[in-house]
Image (cartoon, rainbow over the protein chains, first blue to last red):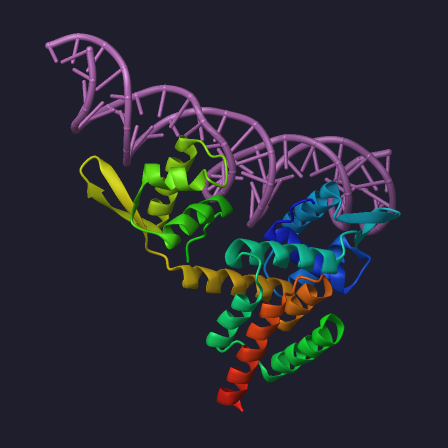
Length: 124
Length: 124
DNA sequence: AAACTACGATTACACTCGTAATCAAACAAA
DNA sequence: TTTGTTTGATTACGAGTGTAATCGTAGTTT
């Protein structure tokens, strides 16, 4: 698959929340959080299009951008490969790290419990 | 913190398993798995030293390298930041992705169950 | 119509990364 | 002692990244 850089991923994040969007809207949205020059965002959009992760349709002079790469695919791919590199593919040590550092919330726990019972329903 | 590239992380992985090690031993060990030119590994070691992630002591002509950055810190930092970027900091959606893709093993489930009960012991 | 503006396209540029090759110095061998 | 070899240091070099500036052109304003 194509590689998405961190900066590019932030742009994609906006498009995953809402699309299609014009460049200027994307820029405005991004700058609620960060501080990016208009030109910078345009470059990132261009690169994403070139990589095939984003496409657009013309609305006369403007382009309306939308994601081609699905968020879930990206999440899946990225987390898979991180867990592979860091923990030889096992996800539980990652969760253990979060637990140790007190980065688990009550509803994380609830979700995990549900995941587990679903899994056991299916696989046991 | 300093950024560790993927290639650099592979070298660190070797040192985390065993240290200190001479460059040539590291190279040999790495080449059980991958195919890296000697010069390449030397470069990576140099960069790691420059970044402060690795240090060495001299054994006459050779250097004996050892990690300064701890594996757990690195794991913690990297997984934290990935989960932040991809899932707004929540770890359970990541695990959900693994579950959906059938990337959970029975002992992952066991570990998770234990984590959860420990967490509940402490936090409830 | 001339000047200005808003957009996307193209170009820029320093820095990191992967992947080495070359350099210099210290030993080892002949 | 001259020659090779081993080892770290320095240099190389194209691709990717973060961060823009400039160019060309289609609209907009005066």
